[in-house]
Image 1 (cartoon, rainbow, N blue to C red):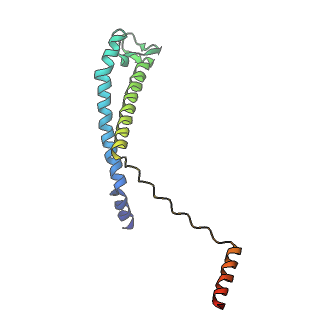
Image 2 (image 1 turned 135 degrees about the horizontal axis):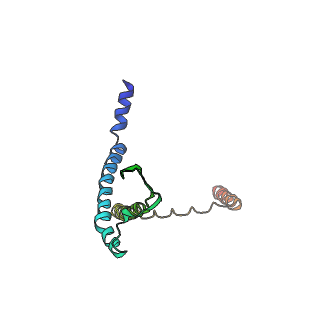
Image 3 (image 1 turned 45 degrees about the vertical axis):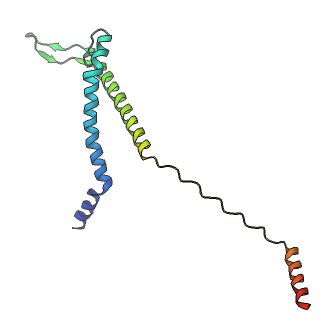
Length: 145
């Protein structure tokens, strides 16, 4: 029973719940960024480079093997560098958005630095041995009078 209780305490801690919310929001945000890249940014970029769809850009390393009927026996081996370019653009935009979000959160949660505490007053210097001796002599002389 102790194991289940311990697991329950772990699972409902604030850090675990915050992380779960972050993963869910991050996944949804990643889909939004992917859509922005695929549907908004890449079409004009492809148009600028001659109407090329980056996801279709690839280098064939080995041609497909076809049988007599023209059916694919062994698929072609391709190097899909266009998909890689697409992923790099996705990552760059996502990283930039996260950077802006963190910067905004830091600005919103930044607390003003507390005013420095005033420096304590320096202690007066201790009397030297001679001063102590002279004070004792003075006090003794006062007593004799």
